[in-house]
Length: 297
Image 1 (cartoon, rainbow, N blue to C red):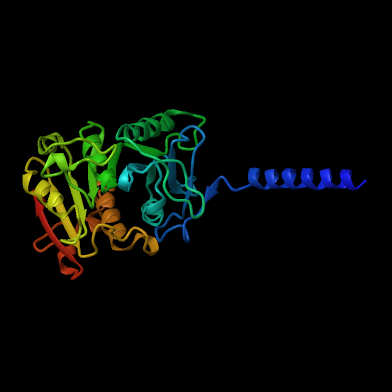
Image 2: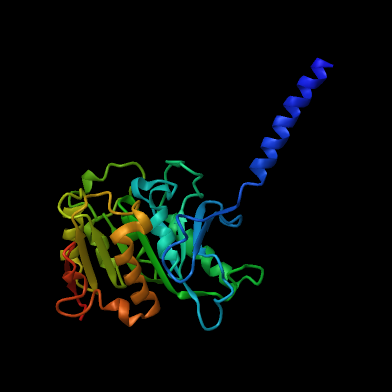
């Protein structure tokens, strides 16, 4: 009897722990879902298990008249997980964007996740376009696949610059990153081996968000800016170092600037554009930021 009771306890523990695991929510809300008009959720779609999706929870308002632009994101340290950028990415999505980050959705408190490649950005773009045409997809007819951005932080910024040559890309946002002035310095495993000549492949408006002179990528990013002359380019520096503000509530200042750029470039938002246009531009009036620009009125 005691033995049977022991086996029953073991079975019960395994069964209920398995049931609880199976019932864990497939989606998660980061913070409060963001400050935008469309509260965001985060999840890994079964048709793209290699990535994490951030998007408005309620898709019913999107369709023929209102569509979601697409943003593919690459992580710092070439990580195959967006765990460091959840607040930032959720905040951007809450303003009406489909954000597809490299790496499966991290569990609560999980860090790391292996290494990623620039090709995973292309995978994200291909998936979004396919979803928009798939009648069985919740995104069917709800995406603006003519408005696609690539963006990323540090190593993810280099992945962004590599993917930005894709003709489907409408804009690029490079965060805490830049192509190495000395290419031999790019010894980090999995880091794209780009040279400054790669900047000539940029064909769409580009934003650099850097952490000021304390940012280890500052010199590389500013050198990129000096060499880009064929497309509109804007550089914004906030004195926070390489870590940026991604983990701050709602992604902090970096999220505000990136979101405004996406609103302008992917949605034609005139009010958002005022942060970057004009002489002086709106962002330069904020004492937290130092800015420069080319080919932007």
